[in-house]
Image (cartoon, rainbow, N blue to C red):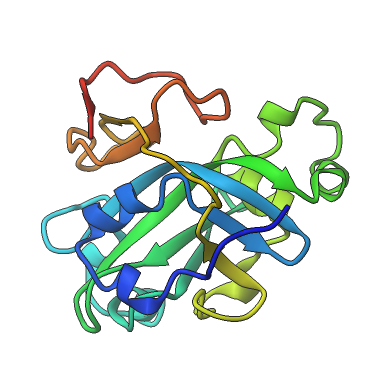
Amino acid sequence: MLFGRILPRSFYARSTVEVARGLLGKVLVHGPTAGIIVETEAYLGGEDLAAHSARGLTQRTRVIFGPPGHAYVYLIYGMYECLNLVAERDGRPGCVLIRALQPVSGVDLMRARRGATRKLEQLANGPGKLTLALGITRAHNGADVTRGALVVRQAPGAGEIEIAVTQRIGITRSPELPLRFLMAGNGFLSARRYNEPSLK
């Protein structure tokens, strides 16, 4: 499948919420594997206690405070890696968690990496699943996603997307913030829960 141009750094040098919404419908590509981004979550600086950057500048969070358009990859539960894309201008924290993909390229390789999973809808419908499927690890932490093997591209012929907004899921701090964005009605979401009005 042919994809459009790689998203430039200027795409990421905006508010985290704008980037989180703008990433929907774009194509995350790593080597021969790729998927349409169908679900994201925004993590803000300052008073967003769920954000790693809320602890301030540390060796771990240095990437989040750095230039936009880089990958922030971390481990959860001691076994799953999660991919975030850094937003905001240099020095201002903000990143977007990629929560779910609709596979469009390299599906056989994704299935091989995911083991027993057979259904296409379950290959990358979660932040830990999609990194496994695409072969993304903590070795990619700090990678520049505006060039190289791990990039985000425009989707060819993409039309207007109906975006649904909900609270973030799977967190205990600042769970009330409506910062989860998804392609309404898509069958590849990490969870079907969204009761908020759809927003353009």
